[in-house]
Each structure stands twice: as structure tokens, then as C-alpha cells.
Length: 177
Image (cartoon, rainbow, N blue to C red; front, side, top):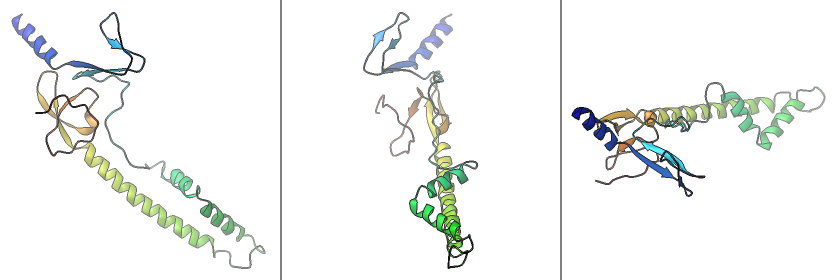
């Protein structure tokens, strides 16, 4: 019985609650809630309403590249103009110049721009992967410090952040040592 009491006290020692917001009131079960408040439980499983900590700065994925790229390109009036002129030149008798004088260079420019966007987005995906797989020390409810990847950090985790070390999430400082 004494071991159970000690374990319960130890677990409670590393579990905290914190309420963010400007309007609060005490409910019957002891929880503090409010109109503009969030109740965060430290060192306990996160509520399902919170998003994960995975970082994604990339613009595209495999399925969205072509639609998003074409949308971005044809938002510009100059590209719409050159596409229109290129299409009009395909009609015989409308243009005194050749059929492919405008459309071929325009398509080449679009292809080069698409390649540039793919290279930049690949670099973003690589940087995101590197940050998401960086390890951080997390305090467990049992009082142990374990290593987790940044993408696995959840709202309410207590982190050990060392001086001059990179961190990729927003957090509140509990104690400076």
C-alpha cells in the first residue's frame, strides 16, 4: 500500500494543469474554463482537438503539384495574355507569323519554371523532414526523461531545452536552470 501511495504521489508530481484565456470560472468538477480559454494538461495525453507538431512548409505534394502550379502561373495576366496569343496563332489565317512562334517559348518557360518549383519544393520537404526527425528530451509522467522526435511532441509535454540547441515549436518556459 505504501508503494502505491508513493507511486501516485510521484505521478501527480509531474502532472500539471494550465488554463490560457481571459475569461475564467470554476466548474463543479474543479476544472477552470472560460469563453476564450484552453485547458492544457501537462504531461498527460493531449486532447484530440490539438494538432500534431509536424512541420510542413512545402507548397506541393505529388497530387497537387500540377493544379497548384498552373493556378499560380495563370493568376498572372501576362501568362494569360501569352497563352491567348499562342492559341490564336494556331488558327490559320489569323496570324501573319508562324504557328509556334509564341506557344513553344511560352511552354518552355512554363516547363523551366515547373522544374525550378519542383527543386525548391524538394528542398523544403528535405528541410521539413530533417526538423521533424530531430530529437528532443521529454519528461514522462513517471519522471523519466526520454528522447522523442519533434513531430511526436504533443501539447502538454514538458521538454528539456538546452542552451544553444534548436527547437521547432512554441512553448511556455516553466523554469530556467
